Image (cartoon, rainbow, N blue to C red; front, side, top):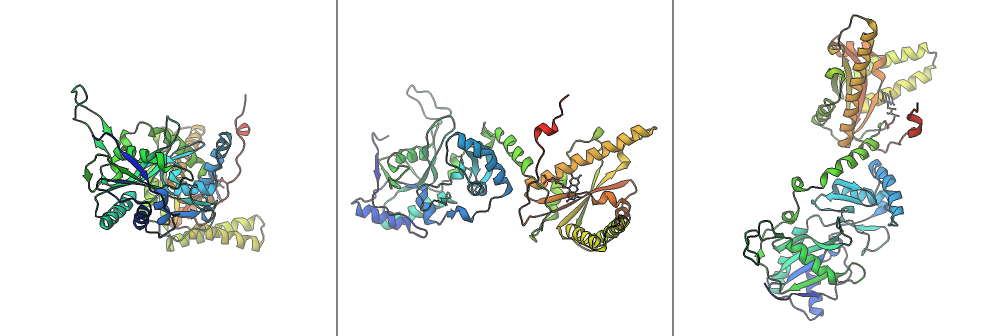
Length: 467
Ligand SMILES: Cc1cc2nc3c(=O)[nH]c(=O)nc-3n(C[C@H](O)[C@H](O)[C@H](O)COP(=O)(O)O)c2cc1C
């Protein structure tokens, strides 16, 4: 182990633009600073300049927030204000969601797991050190690859063997203050596994693994700065390490099953999901949707509670085509008759029929939910028989709710329609269903094209009845 290491910030790095050649810029800056790379140097490079050179930036005004982003915004806006933090717009929240594989916690800050597997605030999206008030930078898609490209290019130009680390600064749970962390590296092992070596007293180390590249990134951070220092590249000299090829940042990421703090995310995500589900009654996209996805959702619906576990639900999946067309034609015929009996005008009836036709024919899938009375308990008296029927209806409704939530998890748009209740026999005849089936509901499902408005909810005080 060496007794000292040197940290040298490279001056003369200009403001970086998309398409800039980072190795060339570093090489020129080294020359202008009268510096030359030496064998064993480690270059720590701030992620911001890599992201900018790769064009990983966006203007927030180009982002359309989803309903989920708006829900999160509503939740965190008061907390952000209370903590005197800068406002997080729905557009920024959407950008964070897009960069995230999983939202772990949303309070005054959003803690997410990015697609790379980094657990950090706001998916590493940065508004600082980027031009324009609405511009943001995203983390590079593959910092290992960028480190490798820069390393091999600089090694070729200078003939020196070096290592490269791409760094960022992350906040930490349990401690205040951000510290430098590595996002990717090339030529150096991310971790130093000390297990098996001896301590001062000759005892064998059983669990010591040093986060080598994080330590180096953090050291470099001391002179890199966070604000307007403009020193995004630091040379670490005299650090003793073995050159290692084909490393991956994944080596430093704790495996999910060993992460003790993840289970909190479940409730958070679930609450957001429950509130962001909407009945989608607008136009569907014509993107292909595989039937296997619909079956996956029905698989979830199977787990709903049901009275004496009767599982009275039966699902019929209808793709677009002749069968669905004749079904809707027959349903609409009955609808026309009913409305005529109600004394509605011809024009009214025409419009209503056109609307149902669009609703039920244009959705990529139409699902019919039936109650199978065969599995209901049989009683000798009418009262209990009626209650058993209600229990059946309640049970299939629970399954239908599971189904809608399963669609929501998969970002599918769906709506529950009661039309089959009014056309039970027509549906049974047209589809040739078993006599024990009672058609109860339709679900249209597909991918959304537009944003559905959020219907108003009754206040809590209006639905909790005090006695
Ligand atoms: C049992 C049931 C029947 C429904 N039937 C219809 C329907 O026939 N037509 C319709 O437009 N929406 C129907 N809906 C959807 C409701 O209009 C919708 O759930 C409600 O407005 C609340 O909106 P949200 O689901 O987006 O929160 C039905 C919902 C349920 C639960």
